[in-house]
Image 1 (cartoon, rainbow, N blue to C red):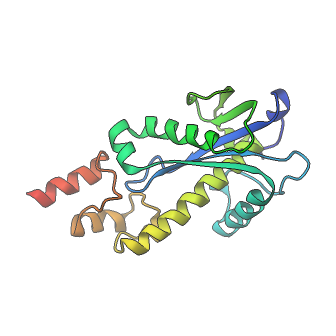
Image 2: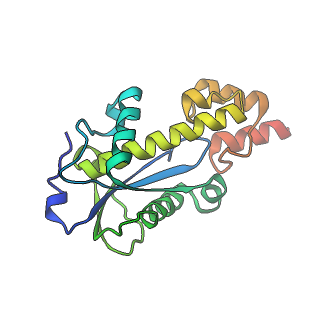
Image 3: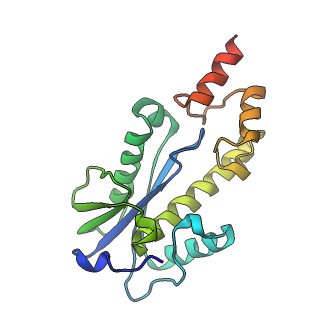
Length: 200
């Protein structure tokens, strides 16, 4: 379970950063930066992938209520122009910029760091080690899932309310049947191939 051990070794305030949505064929990549209050942290915070949907939604509300939270996104046009890695770094930068309290230090999930105005360190599997990063993983995942459910209502047929834009069979069959919409990442091979198939 994640704890505050990493946070205890760096200057405060410390923010954890994580992202959601690097792999999907559609929708933005979303990053969250979270500064948790050390003495008022919700219990049960964990890597978002280990939580049920209901538990993740509940913790999202609890974290928002007590923490300083910044959310940043990179849109599909930016993903296609920059590539998904650079777009993810951009979303992380925007998440930190959105914090109302500037952090003295940032802990970032993974092994790469965005260009930030403060000291930072990359933590491999950080969402299972750091409470701040785990909280950020919950905020990023829940924010993106809610957004994709809304887009699923605007662009029916792809199943985004269920698959969040990931490459499920339902999504793949819809791409072949009705083609991509403006929220598809055309730099991703399955989407690009669906465009080529429709042209031929």
